[in-house]
Picture 1 (cartoon, rainbow, N blue to C red):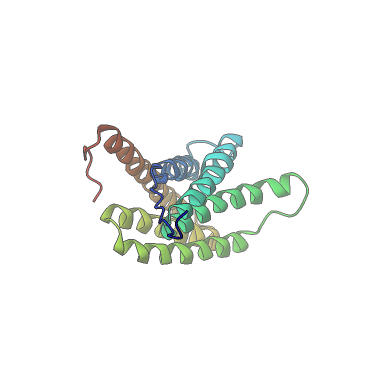
Picture 2 (cartoon, rainbow, N blue to C red):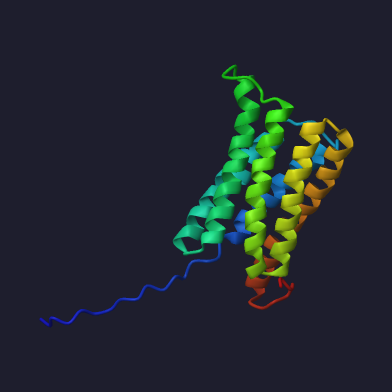
Length: 193
């Protein structure tokens, strides 16, 4: 037996989980904001989508991103996943008689805090692609517009926020599907820079 130690290098052959997380974020955001512009009421469809695909799926993706040594992906997907879980809990807790619904002022502050957090992630995207800057810029605008709508009670601002949210959700879904298409064809079919 030799006393020499052999170096073992593990190669990560797992796929990029970001496309899955972006699908969860994008589709949940899109549906909630279609509600915000008045296309349909807030119902169990949005809550189920939010808790499972927007919430749990993104938390799982955040965990995988952490294992792949991607701090940005871990923090973004994990945090937004828990945002969706918290948002649905804020809707369900009062319905279950476990607490009172938050006031518009409280929701305004909740959304403001998420806007501040998203601003930090937006700054980090300046070391990523232009597509990610556009996505996170629209998310920052969404949180602050929703906060202003709650603080002011102005329905027009909520509609404007909804339009921005439809863009943000659709753009996240576009990026996700472009990633899947490019990976499937093993070449850049859709530019993501």
